[in-house]
Length: 150
View 1 (cartoon, one colour):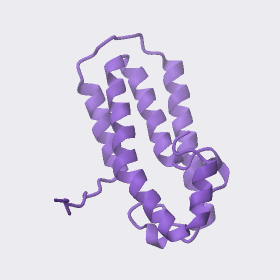
View 2 (view 1 turned 180 degrees about the horizontal axis):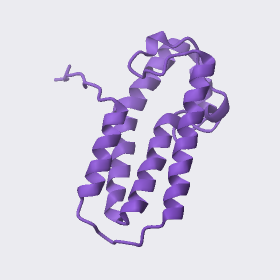
View 3 (view 1 turned 60 degrees about the vertical axis):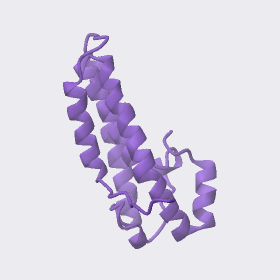
View 4 (view 1 turned 30 degrees about the horizontal axis):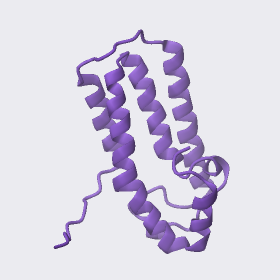
């Protein structure tokens, strides 16, 4: 018997917030000294990647809403999208890594992993199916030359 239950999508920013809170309140395991320099590098990378990815979508004049793929006017493959198919989500991973370093606890890495797993399974893979239907062979070729994350 197959299940017809459909996953109700949760916006990735809410998953991000959930993971930051989880990371904060997990019992600290293998604590290490926080490094403001490393926090700034990871945080800066996250902000730069996020800004570059949003800019590419704005320049392409296409939707930023992952729940309205059918309104996408074109497949964005230039700029930061040559390095990653999902730089918006990747930017959030870098910010979570910065948060983990700020917290100084290796157990916070669980929140980073949880974010990557959840977004890949419930957001990215369904988006990829939709983009394949929408852009066909162009999307397939893009997937062959560009990695999902990095």
